[in-house]
Length: 121
Image 1 (cartoon, rainbow, N blue to C red):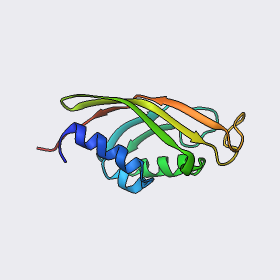
Image 2 (cartoon, rainbow, N blue to C red):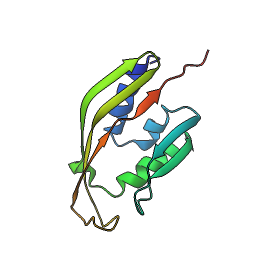
Image 3 (cartoon, one colour):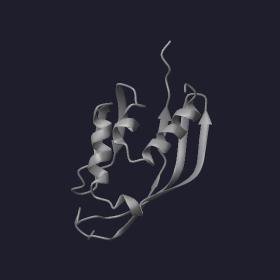
Image 4 (cartoon, rainbow, N blue to C red):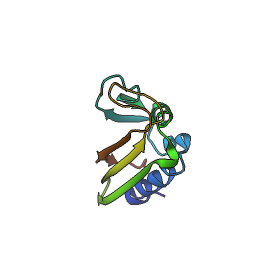
């Protein structure tokens, strides 16, 4: 699995199994990851190392009823080492996680992560 499209598709497959450690295995040692801060949500913010990626997903997923979560993937754009996946995450909150969100609220969020794949020579 060394082409960009295969890595992105595998990442989303692993996300669908809720295996944060397996997702983390796909990342380089150094990453440039930023989820803009939203109030007191503990999973937002910057990450710069692969070891931080599984904790991000575990923290975020702990706030959602994963059996009610779904991902709508609209399009995957690939150009060489670059990829952008467009879509929407839909989650149902497990507990009150931020002011204004109560248990069982539906949270929908668009996403468009840019993945840059660099293979080692």
